[in-house]
Image 1 (spheres, helix red, strand yellow):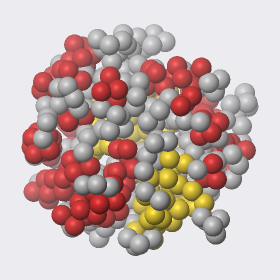
Image 2: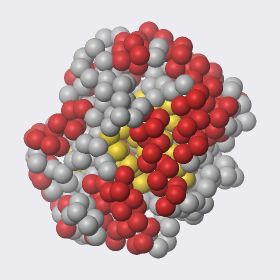
Image 3: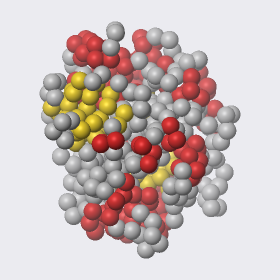
Image 4: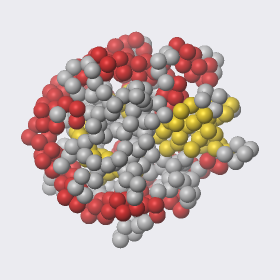
Length: 448
């Protein structure tokens, strides 16, 4: 395959059941996109919603390597539509890569487009600055810093602990740059609160609730680094749970409450439920036993893969299987030096994991791996996994769901190409658009 265009078109032809929008989206997520200066935001003072760096960098370079994009942030997400491939509305999380063959730039008409190897392939829409981002907290902090929204406004992302207690080469997950991202944001002089105060979070949510009159924001996610000992005198369940408890007391039923945390013992999981959490994401990261040990040394040391999986199954007895949605990092299965060397092997392994959980009624979801350069796997695999792996995963994912009679998980908005808002992988874009979505937990109107 001599060009990226030829590769993409070949995959669209070979896998016609995978939406063409998902092929482009996965390629942008795995390899990033460059931005012309005409396509950057004016940060919080402009009309475009800027990238918030809500937990990881999700970039293919450090901030000093991004040039103007480090000074004037790119948009949080972009929407692809139209063009020669007649793309339906596709929301894509922005991952900056100055060396990417994809570039967002303004054309001669002044309108933004996505260019692949110099050819315009779609129109590009950028998220407008939401009204709630224009208002500060009483202490002067921005709403974007405390409670950014992603997925085109659907999800309030509350990273309340911005570092991880799995620290250093012997404990950090080998694909994760949460700790480095914290360091680079602070080094750049950007506001980047390490542990967010509960009252700050509540004040930011009050501003969002007041100005989000259309109720576009429908869910919130509580997350952050793992807590292996204590943080502010609390264990992991109580630390993240105290935010959920406060939010549910102040805004009962306003948002679907989700928490991303480690796979915890059942009693701890019950505390999440008691605090008002409605969806639990105990991420299993990678399925293969050997790769879990190599890529997630801290999780293997403190919990262990078998116990991690047992806890996921146990948590379904607390939340119900539909409301336990563990994430995996799609693509690390093929990361050198330990990963699978063929797409066939990688897909077989990942599908084994999908079948394990889906046979129990648990529907995993996934984030497309971005090989951040400060991570061990990113350094060794700057190109990430082959695009074919990602396209075949979408096919395998949908097929496995159909085998077990499952539908799209709650808390992710509408499924289907042209409808989906989940921006860090294409799993929702690849599910049937005419599917009757699973009942959303809680209240609120999904983005349409």
